Length: 410
Image (tube, rainbow, N blue to C red; front, side):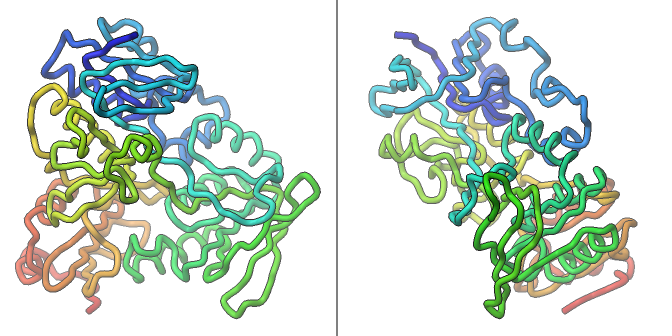
């Protein structure tokens, strides 16, 4: 039986960051990383943006570590194309899909998530796909070059980023969502309205408040059937459709192992599950929010990096609480957007600057306290905004620091 001091299940940014965290405290312990994918750990945000837009881009450009880094490290073993089927948290043994059993003195589940399925007729048609892996992005790159009209199901991160990227590839695009706003529950209504208008000015079409009920075609997609709010059926001509309605945490291993699961694997402030020596981190983990204290799950790059590193350090004995206020970001057309904290459904919104392609900072508050900030083309304000959200700044104190905001919605 293979044995490792640290056994990591998953091959994304979280796994690579956990390796870094372990090595900060233990430069000799053996580490095994097991991933289903054929590639070393890589960054996913470029899959819907830069990587997709570059016809000749190599997967090596996505990798978290330089080429051959894992092969060159002492006592670090990377195993690709290996699926772990079972975890015994008491014996600390995992079983792979080919029947091999492996012991890990400390085990980390960093399996991330999988695209949330849309359970309707026609998802098996050629031309209907999701976007999660490098292979998905490469396929879409080729398919989009041949497409006349693309339907993007979902007006969240995947749908909106793809709309921006495909527009640059001169592909006619329609975004369909059951919500009546883009990025619903992420941005306040004022910001959502601005972003929708901004996309429409650049040629992106929207059909909001509509539900996709079927994909239709003979072997290959030819149209998308939708149902509008007044329950009238409509159809959109399409030879390509991408489903982007969120991800589901890949928590099957934890469920099989009897670990506490609730839309993610529940962990404490150290990243440890309810089984000793078994940890979870990144997209798949449900952890105590460092500011508000409730259990949350986060699916963003910065959290994957920071949480993976902290949990890796804790596997090596650090016993450090995860207190990092993560942020998420996106780049669409000429807008660079960074978000700290909770910005959805605020009861007050204050805008410093003007909502345009220029620079602005949007402050979101509830019950008189700042809960989140949205920065548009304002990288210089990131450190200050992080501090303000972490400090749960009052709106009264915030207004004293602002030099006459251009707009103030209440």
